[in-house]
View 1 (cartoon, rainbow, N blue to C red):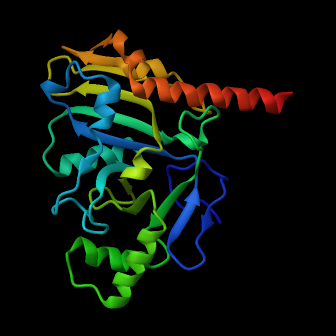
View 2 (view 1 turned 30 degrees about the vertical axis):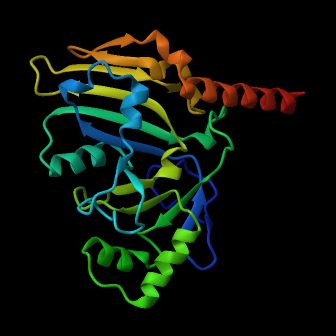
View 3 (view 1 turned 120 degrees about the vertical axis):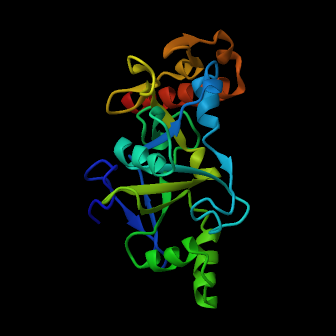
Length: 257
């Protein structure tokens, strides 16, 4: 199958479910923009990223697809992500998260290293049902059954067309899929401030996404400066991810022997 999404590496295999609009693949980049507020100063990159997973509300897009899910909205590129939040009246003070599916890293930090299971709401006809869901229209029994069957497959995210940017693709992540994401970079641009201050924290480098786990402990301080919280390396998140990172290194060494 050819390339279906613009934020995926070219030439990667895409497996399709025999009956349902579900794809299984890897090597994606995802972007999320949020309006930066003063109370975000002092929060580590880890805490800021954790805040991207939120309890669903009725007015959140497609939040009624699967009830009882925490959700996180991402996009195929920074331009789509910025356009999406601008549609809802965001200021020019923007925090941009650049994430990737951890299982595609040369050195995974989440175990097991799995591909993403994506509900394709763009191709294969599911977009018609998805439009009804988004408009809170009554579904037929057959449509409800299809959605239930998809839910039983425990998908990681839903791909759908952006209404804010023509040609853009958005991704709605469910909690289990969100936990498969790792950060490559978090950047801050205070566009409404004098001087348009900018700062960034790089959490993984290179085309193979080599992780630097300790960098999740950096935080932004006023104005657009970066500092470090030494206590982060004592956190459960750091300890658990490092265990998986060390295990991944061991596997690489075994393969090279």
